Length: 268
Length: 268
Image (cartoon, rainbow over all chains, first blue to last red; front, side):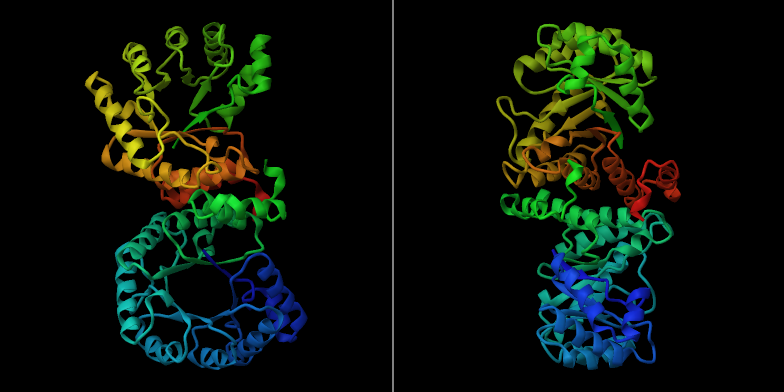
């Protein structure tokens, strides 16, 4: 299970303020906190600053990689911003994201094929958000076909089935869970990734819902999640799910996390 | 999801003490607490008192049904104790349990077929605890065949795949999860039930592991669980899993539980 730390996103007020002030110490600390909590990639997103996104995204790439020795998830719908950011990145980034929308696909393709990288591929249809399992699986198949035809390795594709809120339609949870399982079965070797938090939009106790949803996604074979690794409840569910699913030899990682205080001890 | 409240079991020190003192007020309160927390059945088990099990189990049946208007899960390996207890029970009980072990099957069969009831059927082989998925599914098939041949309705059979600790063998979680799914698929109409807590035997933070395991079991289609309904973490995971899995229309039960304080509010 690959963990992409989601905190450095200017849709969060404190992150936006730090980016505007160019407060490298603050951003560096947020990156370190996520690395210490177990992040494998650090997401960077400056999308709320429409006019200055490229400049700020580039500053984030440099600032975060000065603070932590981790690859980044370069997160933007803008080909211009991604194209500039990827040139500053050390190591192999994750590029978030490409989709089947024609303009976006055509503009992103040269960026994601210019160097080895992992690619987040969104299960949008050509014109809309997906609703059913079938729409997601069909979009996944088309993305995989077109990306591998351009020489992208299957294991570098991270298909995002696009989570939608259960508060809007109670079928939305099963639609994503079934899509993850079907995509992992139908395209052996490909990876799947989710942002979790959209599942709980409009509901109370969102951290609870997100953490339960992570456990359910893991049983379906999800390869990676974009989440807040400093959220203890999430990490408790992640570590215990992984162990129950037989992916923690001798239960060593779970016991280790317990001894380090990553798991709240008074739950005994 | 049917909830069987597990607390009234004399393997718990405070329950054993109350049973020995015939403290009806204490036992009645434990029953009420579980009913208020959402239990559909109340388990009663006096198995630690080998010589007086029948007497104490009968006292528990009367005492608990005086306190709450719920059916009980009569829990004993002893045909004599169950036979006496079932006669005192008002309504349709759950009888826990029968298995393929020859002496047990032959002795339990007349008890479970004497009146309408739900029957917990353990996936023991004829001689041992099951290890693999296949052993569990095969035992389930044999139990279903023999019980339905005796006139038991399929929907009254609750197959228990028998949870074993991941600390002993990290494949034990997947063995039960796969067995639940296979049994629910192969025998449409039958029910499945689990005691959760054995999964975490020998590990720290057992309540965390049990609650994560419940979420995983629910995705596989588990019909019922024997658990502590006063454990907030368990019930939070149960209510959020149920909602994500599309079984909570308009998310009404989840929001209701939030407003009543059943779900811890500071998780927001």
